Length: 276
Image 1 (cartoon, rainbow, N blue to C red):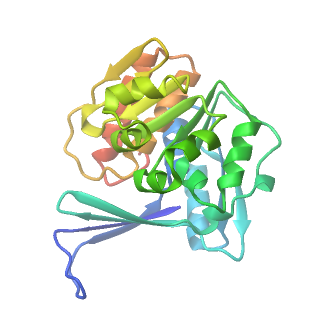
Image 2: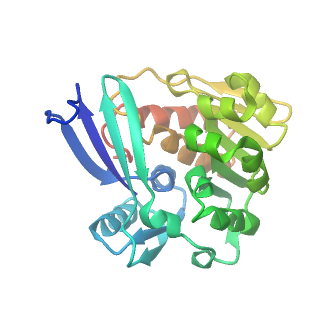
């Protein structure tokens, strides 16, 4: 997807104001892939783009970032885009799934072999790609089979029990505090412990407060470095990519969690979503 970022002190409904508008490559999977590749991990991204300038920009940017890609091209669909509006410290987003919703089972290999596999909840919550996610999880041959919940409003609409049923092949759940609350009706640490009863690993991201990672019998915590926040878009994706990359290479969970928090903070302290 492409991220269209708009920053303004105020918006005038029905009128014009000055602000900053930036277009850059993005999307949860692409963001996580770029950050994982930055750590030295070998990453392959499966996805779907349109036959348009946005799609070509994303494909070229991923290649330049060291990410291998297998991107299906849909000539009759436009590449996905995310509008991110930042106003007085608040961030709102509108997602146009575009070609992303057209990713099909045929676009994936029969076996998905890796140390870690990451799937975005956005794909699961879209009827057009829901079946592809279920198939991908069934084809996964990885130590870490992860899903990032990605959106609490979409999760609420989809339903927690429906989510649990669809994500049966997952052993690693990633969520922010609001998403974890929707799933468990509990505060972050308690939510992580509760989710760890369903999944081998459960991670709850707490933004500027760090993160908690729980297993059946252990809980790890890490603080986030203090930063001057610029734009948090993609910070959670950076966290995901680095956490899974570090765990895949055998890092201690505490160290991996700390490294993930550092990556998320670095992303949030810059206007650039990907590492420079």
